[in-house]
Length: 101
Image (cartoon, rainbow, N blue to C red; front, side, top):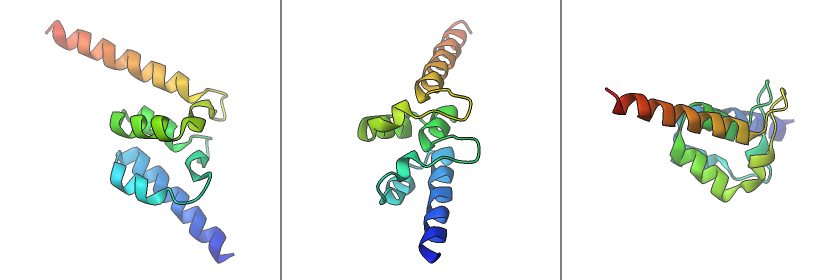
């Protein structure tokens, strides 16, 4: 039972690191096979959260080193690519608006 609780705590910390965008903390928590695909209560993986919070360095790290996460779906059946695309559109729109003053 102790190992299960330890793993559960590690998953929670992994998701917190994804929300904060802390790459070093995130890397230190990926020491279990498959933990990168661990979901929260609504089905988000750490990549979903890193994308939603626009932590591009962390998104790049996860996508490059753990390509299996790109096909992960949330509970609404959205792939990570849905969030990546929408985040990209928001960044482009924001840059366009900034360029217009």
